[in-house]
Length: 422
Image (tube, rainbow, N blue to C red; front, side):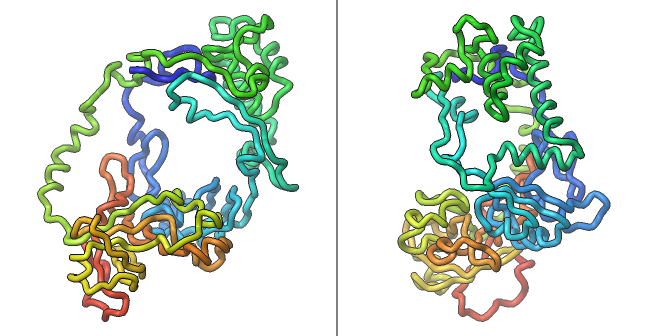
């Protein structure tokens, strides 16, 4: 199989870690859900904030996220955020989540900062590298994300910013510079001198490029890649075709493609049992839309124009069964919440399945998204998703196939509470 070899990747092809997937080394405080690669499922977020206890989450640093729109049982999380002792958000908007922040730090926009893509170079169909300068000057008082991140890390650790920068740089130099390392032509002091013309991410990138497969290794002979060389290549550099990289790319314990890992095979009996259960008569699924991505873009006039897009797609047979009319509102209810949403009939839907897009629900008090509120407010689908319905292995929330009830918005309430839904 062919894989890219990016300019910023280590020259040594050996995976940094080989063995068992990091899983369940520790668990969440309230429900005991497993960590996965050092991260806890977002389904734990609200309960870790609102459940009393010595280790309760009392503060939050949020970077360009909107979990009130994107996490299960969003209503509970919305209330939990209001009870935090402190919250700082790095964002350009006062949205459904950042409205709870004590401090919102505006960050420079994409065209206001330099760019080297650490992710998508690794998904390319040909090896290449490209650095882009900033196109616009940021407004006064706006800072790049890396400066804000350093300040937050330093302040929360009780050290100054320089100490955090030194921690990052020294760890990278130890791994790449000196005898027996990729850059064995220079020592720590010489490498620091060569990197001193840069700051922040540019300094880190220069080190990564120079110590990578195509790098100059801090040699002065003009061969190999450095940040200076990349900047001089206005349209980027072509680094050649992809090459076969198996088995070196595999980080599995066996060094093979493991089609039936023990972690998943052990869960098969539970899965078989689940398949034997009676399905819910009506389930909710989400859907993607071409003019939006999650909760983004609804505040951009060119993308928010047109008809309302937060509608409930319903098959005509289901509409007749539940007494629904196209264009009128329906009440959609799950175990944890309910919404009122306009009905749109669609033959594309399977009977017994309704569809509601996520990322909407912008008309909460305190939200400052004028265009979104006026043109595409919608309703929050994650008021219906359930933090108790999880993938057993990872603890991730199940966001599709949610059991729901449906009725016309003006219908009398049915006997029993929403808590009775299976």
